[in-house]
Length: 314
Image 1 (spheres, one colour):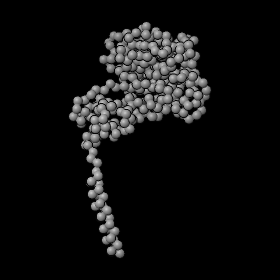
Image 2 (cartoon, rainbow, N blue to C red):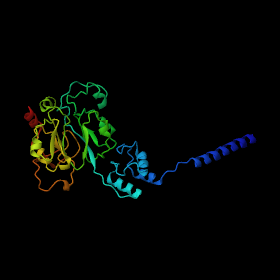
Image 3 (cartoon, rainbow, N blue to C red):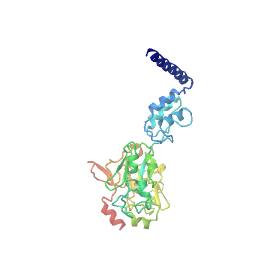
């Protein structure tokens, strides 16, 4: 019995020595900067940087294969920390947020058929190009909300996705998940957007959506430097949108939205705050103020209710 115990002990000791020698010989050295960078990253593993995870991104940064300013969830603070670890000057980053370019919920946009399948936008899109008449509108099944790791997306009671500018980190996961490319990235400093994703002519848009862009060019006439109409769809020129607010109340279908005034109907997100430096004191906004459910007075378009919209496009 004693001989067996000694024999097994000797075998175990020999194996341990061999494994220790091999581990030392074939050990892969890890740059301590890699571990330090991984420590300061957000840990979201969202892939916004273009790498499969935070670990892969940290390794690429140390190897000089990736820039230090690609972690959008971490923001400028993370960029500064990474730059300090690398011993280089910090590079600035323009923060971007995701925007759902649609307000056509179940009360404003027509449907082709009643969808009873899997509650997933990609699955619904496979059935006759989706149940919504508008070819580019939000399908409202919440795929984007489920993939968002930061809880920045809510689904309204009338099936419309709305993204909070304050909570969005710009990881782009929702952009990749949307089968209709109705979610786009925009500068966080811009609060005014044309919330429409249809390239159809105005006459057709009127037939299936009460709040879509009809390419009337009124926004361009009101603020020519801030808007452009291309392929039957208006869009904001974000790099020169200082005059864009003047066109919000002029839009006949109310498809231009100022998020500093409020999010689309049905959203529980409070109006987005815009730094004072981005809005000049005394600048005319062509809007009036009425009480809202947020228990404070905020500016809203002159058209005070949906009935006004119904009358204007009838």
